[in-house]
Length: 81
Image (cartoon, rainbow, N blue to C red; front, side, top):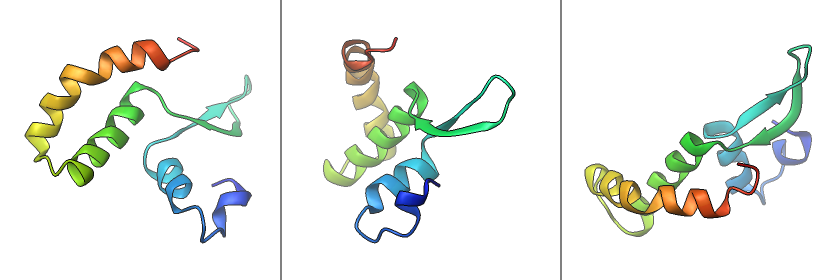
């Protein structure tokens, strides 16, 4: 967990994203870089949690909703490809 988020009571979202869904980058020597990112699977996990919570969808409904919408959104917004 990056230090700036480890003690912050104000940034529960970032701590949750990093702990639950993010992937830490690795240097050429295999050591962690301290830089975190979300891949498609991480974004799908976050998205499923959000649509279940905020749209009140059941897990199978959330999966169907994301199967329909997420790939197109990912392709549009993933600027790093």
